[in-house]
Length: 237
Length: 242
Image (cartoon, rainbow over all chains, first blue to last red; front, side, top):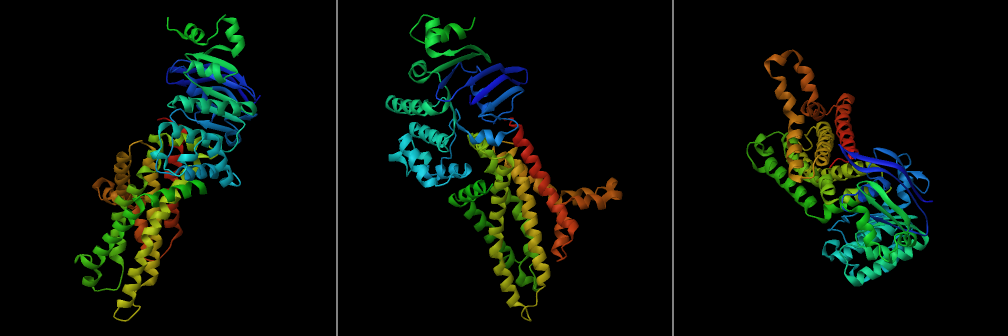
């Protein structure tokens, strides 16, 4: 397995954001991370990417512990943060070159052209990031996440702000990437889960309330859609 | 570290920050040195650059915080710090890259004042009648002073998301570090330890180096100030509490 999380806790003051989560993710599969806002999805992802330190528990990526072998773990992760932070004053290619530099990629020029092709940035590649529409910014975010060909992709709401056509393209890209890599993505769009995920984790209030293959989960609950399952498991009582 | 350094330096020179700072610094220096009667070399009548090195610390007090205020505050505000922090970089590489880029900008601003040295050198009643040793010492002192201010500025930028707050605190801290200790040492009840207090201030060490004597104690003092503020910056960033 390439991502392993066991007994992960994150406490902010008195609030438990992540309350003892354990799961594994495997190459060649897309893992959907579902849950209401504030359930702890982003926090878990931030811990996995080595951005936030956890309160207790262990997390490792490709066999590298994110706390003790942070740099090695980070090398194997491509991460798209939820807010998709970018430098608006940089040109698209300049930004991608900067990211290549941080990853010490050989032949950055060819690799930049490749990811521009992959993410469909072609027509906008000569613009400044600040001039791009939200959908294209999202593609730049995705491009910087996959530029070093990481084994693990962690995407926090990768399709937010995309129009229906872009949605289809980006979902297809994620699905293609998921054939060889470990992909963990969070989303609020249930159709998206049905379209691209192989496995599903539903978390609520920092705890895992469902973790299964998508088809098994649907079978268990005798339904065709994930939405009723999500509502039933995460509804406030 | 080199990646961050180059990116920072690029962003200084692709925005107006670098040019404005350099132009303001050189214009102000030129005015004080040649035009304003109180500080003008021509009025002063001695072939020396003393007034340049007397005024520069006060100019830097405002200009350097203006350079450094956005370095970390903006990354935190825009969330791009998360982008940097999740790349295979250590926090130290980020901090040092940012620090060195701002320092290089300061050095670039200082360099053209070499023309003043050249001019004064030739203006001397006997050509070359200028204390070159003192000038070289003063330049080293000025760069060290700049280094200390930059470390204060970068630190202030790390404690807030708001650039204006970062600027204001950096100006105050730089001012205090430069001459605050001198003033405190004059308090009556501190008379007995005024030597120690004066020694804590930047001014004392800056003046010492300006005389053209590079004492390791002064060098060590500046390096300590820089190290302390950079360590503080790294610690604040490592906490990720914002």
